[in-house]
Amino acid sequence: MTYTLTLFVSDDTLPTQRQAAERLFREALENTLGDAALVAPVYAAYQRIAALYGESPDVEALTVDERMLFEHWQMAEAAALAAVWGPYRNLDEGSYEIALSD
Image (cartoon, helix red, strand yellow):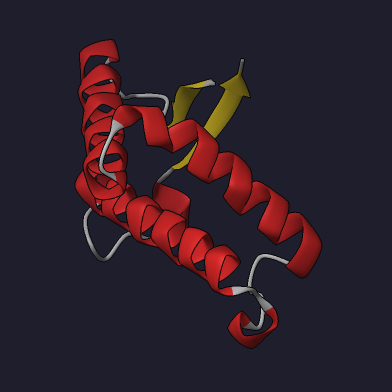
């Protein structure tokens, strides 16, 4: 399983700036999760958990494995967002989309 990353940034962002930001985002995700090969499966697991329990689940309702995956993805996402937009990012600064493929 692999993933494709799309960053949604300001229209006045240069292509080279977008590519650099995408590289930073990927590196932060991959480094936090431990390997590039883990991004897609951990994200897929996160999506399944969020679909079952919601985006902000009661962690007590999750199994230990679900909680570990959910929290690990949240840490990786936070690191990636901070790498691109800084630790104090505002929601209007941009967003991302990850598409999974086999």
